[in-house]
Image 1 (cartoon, rainbow, N blue to C red):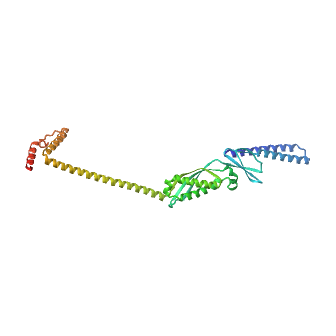
Image 2: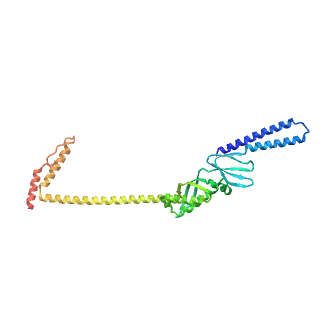
Image 3: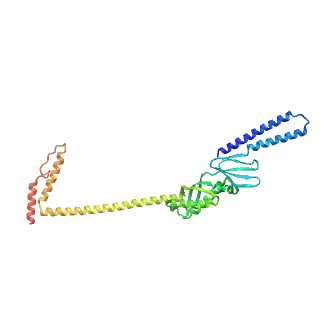
Length: 318
């Protein structure tokens, strides 16, 4: 696309240079002619004009079509011709014909649309479209749409398709079923673009956002769900703690019952527990750096008196 203006500029410069040379040559011829020769002067004037026209025509009878481009020829008497010129150098009749160059390579375009969903939520969608004209229909495109065909067609059909497709989905479905929505938009948009002889190589949703109210509602819903999950966790934790307390109490009650039965059936059980307690006390005091003097009563080592008491009580029960 950047080479076409450069070629036109070079062609104009060549034309001006040749015209200047022809003009200088004509002036030299007229300067050397004797005065009073009317007929020779007229012939020379016509010759100069003919040379100028020949130089202009030779400099403007060729044009180039760069890679990725096509040319549509406009004729002053026949209008737009149906033949499309491909890449390369072509002949043109100066003044009678004028080539119109088209870029047939795919061009990206970003289009934004604000539309409403099925549940009346405002949705802002950005769509990236990769489009190009159909080379076989370039004369029709030039005749009906001109060279700025994409500006005339794409914004209108994209907005139309987006509004019709988005209106069939809820706001939540636009997020969870994004691939299906994109495929539906692509199918409908391809059908509409072919009516204007345009080819779409790619259609994709690049951005999807909702209104502030809906966004705030979604965030509040998420917070409420998290709080509900947290409350459920607290309830489950309390239930587990309750079960643990019950099990612990049942274990302690059973333990107390077993201890009671052991004391009733075997008086030596208490004496055994006293010895275990005395061992624990002695172990603790042995690790201390302080000096402590205790008697057998304080250390629970006076097992003789207690044994006599227990035996006496056991004998009375029998």
